[in-house]
Structures are given as C-alpha cells and as structure tokens.
Amino acid sequence: MNIIEVMRKFATQEDCLKYLEQIRWGDGVICPYCGSTKVCHHQEKTKKRWQCWNCKKSFSVTVGTIFHQTHIPLQKWFIAISLILNAKKGISSCQLARDIQVHQETAWSMGHRIRKAMQQKDGELLKGIVEMDETYVGGKPRKHAKKDDNDFPQNKRGRGTKKQAVVGMIERKGNVKTHVAKDNDLKFGALSELVKNHVDTESSALYTDEFKGYSGMNKILEHKTVDHSAGVYSVDGISTNSMESFWAILKRGIIGQFHHISKEYMKKYLDEFCWRFNNKDNGSIFDNLLRNGILYQCRN
Image (cartoon, rainbow, N blue to C red; front, top):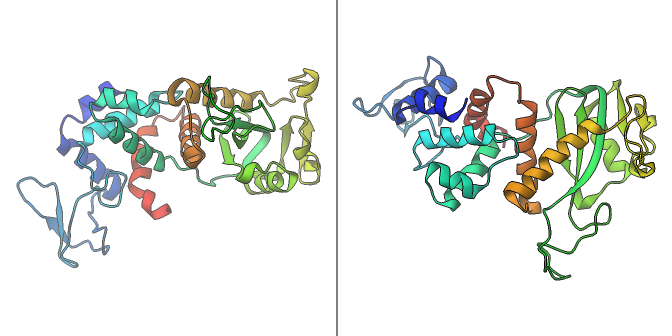
C-alpha cells in the first residue's frame, strides 16, 4: 500500500482506529488487560476508547502494540509504515522525519517500533537449494578516523575486520534468514548449529564458498562449494549469487541511507531488510505488518 492509498483509505484518526480494531478483534472487542468480552464504549461520542466491565479499566485498540501511548496521529504512523515498506534500501530517520513532519528523534523511535513488528521468526525451515554466506557490516569508516576509534575504526576488508560478522541463508527463489554472529564466531560449530536450526537437512543441498568454517557441512547435509578465491563465482549452478545479491541490497542501504549501524541495533535493521525481501511479492504486506505490530508484545 503506497502513501496515496494510505491517505485515501485512512483520512482520519477514526478511520485508522476502526481498521486496527478490525485487524485485532474482528467483530468482538476483547479487553487487553483481563481478556473479558464484557466491554462498552468509554465515551459514546468519540468511540476512541473502551471500558471493561470486568476489570474496570479503559483501553484503546493501541494498548500493548507498537502504537502504545503514542501521541503521533495514526495516519502518520501508517504513512511511515508505507514509506519503510516501499523503500527497497530503507529510509533514514532524517528523511522519514521530513516526510511525515516530526522531529528526527521521533522518527528514529517510530522506525525502531516498526522494526519490532518485522522481527524474524524461526518459521518454516529452508528447503531445496540453500545458499549460505557471511559478510561484515558496520558502515564506512570516517576518512580521518583514528586507529583507536571504536565507532569507525580503520578496518581491514573481509575477514579480520572489526566490523560485525553476519551470516545469511537463502532458499533459491525463496526466503532469506540472517543471524548476527556472537563475538564474530564463524567457526564450524556455530555455523553448523545455524544450519541445523534453519535448514531442512533431509531435503536440502547447501551451497557455500570455500571458507573453512563450512568444511564438514557434508556430515550434516549435501554440501557443494564454489571457489571465490580462484575468481570463480558459478559452476554448474553452484553459486552463492542469491545471497550476495541480498548483501548488496543491505550494504547499499546502510551506506546510502543509514551510513552506519551500531552492533546494538544490527539485528533490528537486518530484520527490516529480511522482512521487505521475504514479503516483496506479498500483496498483504501492509496488513501483515500491522497485525505483527499489534501482537509483538506477545512474542517478546
């Protein structure tokens, strides 16, 4: 849903509230505090809040959601969601702030709340041909960064860098999953656990590069490699090109939009890029994100 459709469909705060109520409760309102269905409108004229007869608390549809206690109009929230979903390489908080006319700090906070609704779930195991690759993320160092600058160190490229190691797995013509490597651990033990947890080892073939961390994967499932060090990137269909394409989108987004991502928030941004990629052909992506945004506290 683009911003024109959002503005047309949700012209008022009441329109937004009714839409959220339909997604959250359908035809039966339930108290988010005690689960009772004995409720009525708290204010009959505005119908913005509900009153529970059981626990005596008043509530709105936004209680316990990513919109909880927000003072920003829901139309601006919906526009922000639309902008984030339709920006293939992401949108910075500065740009978002200009687009919806809020302070940058507010836009930054809204962006992270929206990313909570994009959290990666374990979901179904990846099947068929699965590509696996690792990369290092953190943004580009400042031109005159000092050697002891922790935020923007003068990093080596590739393995040995001080940037954050990230591992990705993608099903050919399917979904992608990413994982922030703890302490940059890219040894076989950690990588094999990721494969066991996210790949159907009985019906899948794993394609990787020649990195030694993947050696031994053939003990778990069918494993084939392509030797990037020799300048070879595809042999008889064996490649990691799909995973490399996702890394390209991620890194262009970081460099072009966010410029730098700290390790503290790395997973949140990975969730955002994975969500967009995995739902790129989903016509219900907007509704699905709202549904996740309503239910996110139940998963945390």
